[in-house]
Length: 244
Image: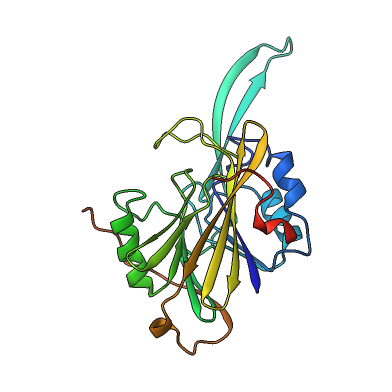
């Protein structure tokens, strides 16, 4: 059994100051073996926090990991604003790949941020990327909308935004969410956690890899991968993951 945390689109600190407290109480060290992050971590402190949960952290670059924009207010002696400047500071994210492959034999997992997908969040487009990456499970973000669904003999998980950060894409008030995958051989049990009206709700979704697709890959590997450029074209809290 391998427990893998799926998390992303945190946008700390320029959209949200921190993770929800109730999520932090769940994400304790020593329980989770690996973290796969869909990007938009945005600051070093958040990255270091993820490493306290599990030292095995793998992050793909999000569209806001390239630069961090800081709004500076210059105040006069009388504390009246006399200038309003945007400063762009580069993040040390050059080592974050645009995509990566993870293998927990026999399950092959691909991770992307999601802005590569055209149309954004479209299952057919995601399925094409999954085939290009040769994976059973594709983890993506960018939409800030949580999703865990089997489609075209593949399993697609979008952990949403762990902070519920604002996005102009689909809805202006996303629900904070993350996902936890319990990998048991060819079976992936995914628990989706959402913070709804101050309470954590958990939904369980199961995916089983077809027997004839099970190969002899190494037990656990992580490899960066470049994918081709795209072409346009719940039960309530206390779910079965309580033991982790």
